[in-house]
Image 1 (cartoon, each protein chain N blue to C red):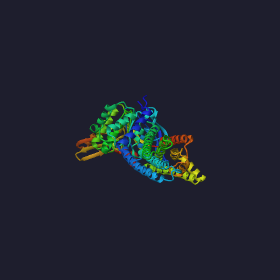
Image 2: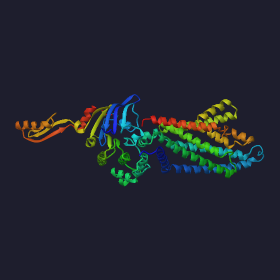
Image 3: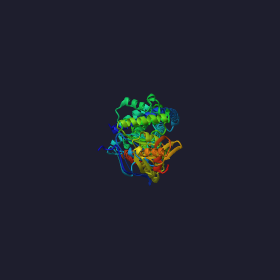
Image 4: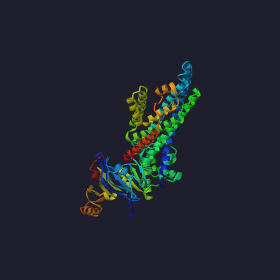
Length: 281
Length: 290
């Protein structure tokens, strides 16, 4: 069996007696895009920071390709974008990527830098200083920075929080592309629709515990069948796709005219709200 | 391929230097230093001129050229140490906690470069630049003193090296403070420690002048606890260590006439102290959650 790119088991972290993570188990495989959801303070950023070695766990295990998280070999294969980050304002986009190429030991040279900037839509502003960039441009530059050196694991903490819809679309496309290259991605995001659109699996955590995990379509259960008849719209709560022919048959037998049938699914948002119990940080 | 620690360290040092150039830090330092040296040249010129007039009948018991040269060059050494310490502190300001709080540090630390390598690179950059700065200013001041008063210290290179090592120790202390405090607190703490060291040196000097063994001992212990001051005092002493007679005695009692010579113990202690401070800083950094 392949070693998971990111393997976390029994992970705990306390800050001065305050429990941020209370025993999390999670795996991310090669070419898999996993979305990490949870309210503010749920422990998402702490988990990500432990995975890249910025925070030391209190207990449990976190490994990157079988190496302890935070060790030099583990750090050599990951890319990371923090939720709150800053780059030297005097640096140009190209200079920043060059710096990270040196630190990551990347031999990609100018071609890699140009490709990454093009990928995040900054190809025409390679010489622009960071301090002259908008927050959205800086965030896209941050994503490009995280991809320097062709990482095997990408840890992104709220990578689209400052982006406009076009920027988000660019990032979605980019995530799909890196997943296609076999990169494992752990994506922290508050944007449920975004997670639902791109993630293969979703893990919902609250109060430092894993509440729910699975494929978005598995998590989103049946939400009933909606039928538009001559006497109005009727909703059959709890009914699933398999129940639709029977419902239509019964309505027609009862003399109703049926104009439209829709099988509804509960959205990820509903699943999320149910899982976290309306909790917010 | 994971880069070697040395290559990573050179990259981080290069980043500090590049930032200094692009932010015009070095340009500002250069302009202000030229201003200081111009002022010093003017002061030295008038001081030596005054000394020649003052020399008249007293020349036989007090060498006016040595007295004026050592005093004014001692003042230059004090100013050089102060400017070097300011440079060392500002080059390491916010290096750990400050940069972590602004999110500048995390993107760098997650790279394969180890935290210890990162810290040592920041230290090396700050210490080398500060040390080079004080050595250059020291020799510039020496050139001015020689040109205006035809006076040279008894030992030329020892005091320069003492100053260089002294500012390297300040850089190490500042890095340690950066692992414990946020930017403002770091700056305040380091400058207060620096001021305490200089005050301790003056206490030792006063103790020597009034023959107070207790005061002298207190100042001496404090100077060893903060060896940049011990090095500075030893540097001052080396300026006039061969000056004899009343001139030598008077100079040693003055504010810029160090009463303590640097034994091999002080140099060894200064290096051990600096390495110890860096080791504690590296340990604190390695244990800090970012």
